[in-house]
Amino acid sequence: MSDAVKVGFVPFSAAPSGILVAFCDDGLKLGPATAKALGTAADLVKRAAEASQFKGKNGAVLDILAPEGVKAGRLIVIGAGTVSGLKGSDFLKFGGVAASKLQPGNGAMTILAELPGGAMSAEQVVAIASGLRLRAYKFDRYKTKKKDGEERVLRADVSLAVGDVAAAKKAFAPAGHVVDGVVIARDLVNEPPNVLYPEEFARRASQLRRLGVKVEVLDVKAMQKLGMGALLGVGQGSARPSRTVIMRWNGGRKTDAPVGFVGKGVCFDTGGISIKPAGSMEDMKGDMGGAACVVGLMHALAARKAKVNAVGAIGLVENMPDGNAQRPGDIVTSMSGQTIEIINTDAEGRLVLADVLWYVAKKVKPKFMVDLATLTGAIMVALGTEHAGMFSNNDELSERIAKAGLETGEKVWRLPLGPEYDKLIDSQFADMKNTGGRHGGSITAAQFLQRFVDETPWAHLDIAGTAMGAPKSDINQSWGSGYGVRLLDRLVADHYESK
Ligand code: BES
Ligand code: MN
Ligand code: ZN
Image 1: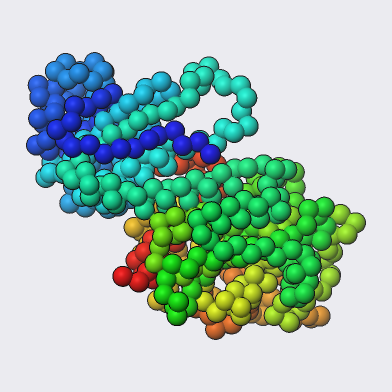
Image 2 (image 1 turned 90 degrees about the vertical axis):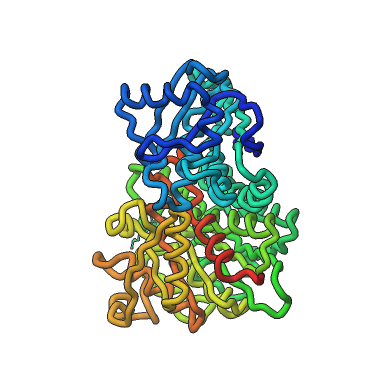
């Protein structure tokens, strides 16, 4: 974990230190406190803007070195565009843009958190602070030699100058825990698969106990007893034994049914006997992005003491080819009693989820459950890397998730389920088969999962395109994105916490 940026809050009147960051709108207008802080340098902004065609467009940057009239050696003006249309995700981006201007050795930065109309709200300030930290994240645990220019570690103190210091501090406490959750998820996704295998993953999830989360680890024997034949079949070819981890955060009323989150945790997916081609197979260390998100989310909820009862459940396996590996043609019996014919051992995620979803539906009886899984390559063909695919048996739940997606910038796009797709996964030998042919691959995978949720309101997020390897963004420069932590934390905060 590398958390390079420390964020603090000061009043506008405090003397700024380090790089100075200010905001303007698309008319190059500055706020009153900003104009005061800049003094004569405000005219410089106008001249520099003209010289470099800076028009204050949303996210554009004007970078002025050694500005006359202020003490700062560097003045950065970030365009806010049309102020009336700004969303929460814009402020995250502004934080990300500011963090991108920090270089090793810079030390300090002061951000004047003001728009032309006046001080930013506590919520907007907090989004900037979160964006700063998310952007500055770097996974360099395994680099022993730094390249030129990388020798000095980035350690910056960023002060946000705000209208109401107490309000900003209060609002950033919970938001900071959510960022910590994202960092945990990113670290897990970025870790190499020789380090992070099912038992080690379970050990890391168990660290949530420090926050008061009850963590139960099911070993192979316990899962055999429960009849989790679908999950165990995937792991049987690996030298690393499988695990299922159940995490419980009880922050709500005793009588409230919990909300449930389920994650696919395939610590490495070779494809098994239906082995994958060598090209980019190393990316399959990230096939536990769903489980990583659930652990990060449980951290966020527990650390910010969310007033909700939440259960996280993750199925941890390694999918390997081996003399003991499962074969195409095998028939396994899931915990639900339904039998599955294995057609392709590379369609393993749905087998893992089948048993964990059933476990949660029957043993936890949640209000609803959301699963996250790097489930299909087909979801990237359909949606690219900007939206996760969403499938649901419940319109209210899916609308709430879609709304949280727009608020956080972790977007989802709903795709259909329907009984018409069932025939594609019916098997001649068992109750179903684990693949549905070439067409609609993400849909048939989701349709398969639906057979293991019974009547529980449920949504499935296919995050194969968003959890890892997505293009770098203003708030994420890392391979593992931590996708889903902010989305589901927001879902809980908006709808399921008791007031
Ligand atoms: N983990 C993969 C899906 C995946 C692919 C995630 C690329 C991220 C990037 C999954 O287990 C898988 O192999 N799915 C197969 C299913 C097929 C065999 C029906 C796929 O998508 O090709
Ligand atoms: Mn696979
Ligand atoms: Zn997989």
